[in-house]
Image 1 (cartoon, one colour):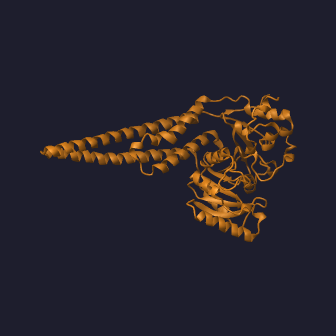
Image 2: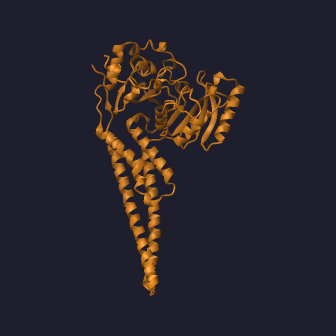
Image 3: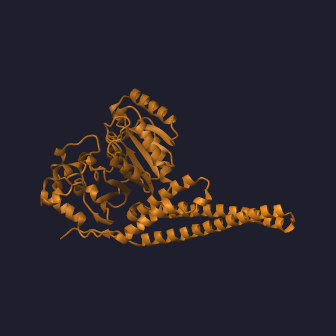
Length: 434
């Protein structure tokens, strides 16, 4: 027994502190925390029959390398216009493709991430907004250091491990994936758990998936310090692949910090970001109005694409004085994002490259035909020498462009093949030991 619970002596216990208030006493009723044998049962359930799929991991790495480095990296000769934007798009496509395979439940839906600092109240906000407290009880404080997806569907909670396995768990098991479990047994589940997908038939949005993420910094971190680097990296990795973003700020902080702005810029979110001042019930109308104005002034001084700033009370389940959140979701619900869309985005980029090369080939072809015709009619020796050099340079350009065109076609063929093979595989189911 002791050997199992000594696996993680150096694990960062702060990783499992997220929401603003909880106490270990609340978890004393959770059998998987208070009973050591049940704790071992939960760990065994998650890890049993887990088989690391090296082929799948290698293919995933290959897709990641191709989309993030190779596709445009092999075409540096072209010096493509707007290349940086295309590279960002390719990187986001990669994340969506890999997510779509692993979390089948979220495909064909718009992915809305909810981010913010520790203690911004992200889980409570989602519970309140989606009315899913029966699955994610607020007083149980399930950890958000493990990314949690919430989707409409039959009541179910599925846990995905880092070695591509999946198992169904219950509410009590979910509520054991917490700071309290770490405190008692010194085991952090995020070592081997990648994400949790919660399905709820009461979820009000059919075509939307919510992503609850870890806070990117400690609530009490002072300006210029963003807390544990790993927390920032986790949140950044998860949120940079979302379609839409809701950014939560604890209204009691009274402002949007420069670290918030810096983090949001690093995500490169294309769609407008909705900023929500949470815990509005703790402030007067006058204070709320002043804080909104202050945050708006801060955002106006940035180049962030912002949908708007509003205030919300997770306690009362009410937005302050307007319906900005409802309008935001009217737009979100009308748009679906899927692996098919990601494939179309990929095809669009390769087509842009192909058309760019075609335009250059036409131009260079005309150029070397022009030099050839001049060579045919001139008799001046120095003109002939100069024209031969120019003609040779234009031919070399033409050959390089043809080579780039071939590389682009090979890239498209190879990445489509890798993606097809990746999707043909399946996550291995985990079953509890009998």
